[in-house]
Image (cartoon, rainbow, N blue to C red; front, side, top):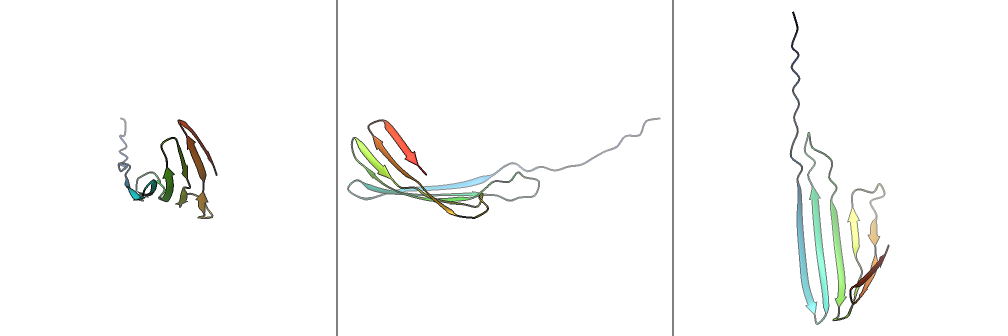
Length: 95
């Protein structure tokens, strides 16, 4: 005679909420604010939260941007600062 063993487990669907706002300040100056909030639910994978502010200047042939990024993924909980530019279709960025 065989014995049947029943094991129950639960999982949740992954979920993260995203809010992005892009605002035209003046002439060719813009700012983007982005928030991604990871849900910490039981039986769910770990998703991180991030907050970004990205001021930028957008010209016809060139642009300049300075993203500021904070996330809870790094242990030091530090703010990362990047710098970037665009010339035509060429983009370059550096942390």
